[in-house]
Image (cartoon, rainbow, N blue to C red; front, side):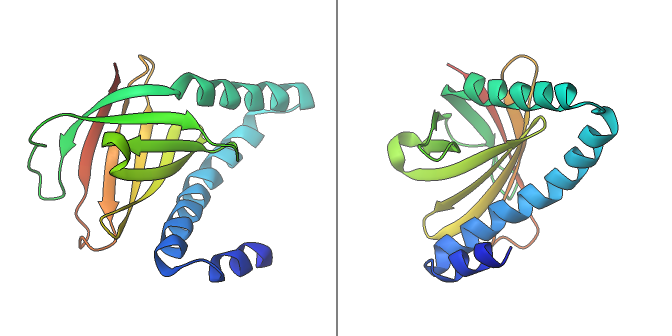
Length: 157
């Protein structure tokens, strides 16, 4: 943890906020998942199978999606957008909206994709549920929006 804090201090302010948001999301979601996994997984073989399932989910998300949703005031998006998901050299998922207008980094925890991004100088975090049909649905919020959340649905194109 000390190493993580030292690394965050060395980043620019917006990068620190984005990194901290993703770490917080991972901690919040991860605690519940890790308790659930440990309660279910009793042998090292079962733990290995769980890890392989997560890696398989990551690979299955790579692709292009059409994005629809609402802003933080509840108004529907004017037109659908596009998000591309690829695998970054670090092993994290890299997300690219509308040809690079917004970029983010994501990590899978259970059946949730936690994403942190910087858009127009504002930090946002998305918590997307990975659905059985390959679509993703969830909510997002920005640091500057006082408690309001937008919604998004991503469908593979």
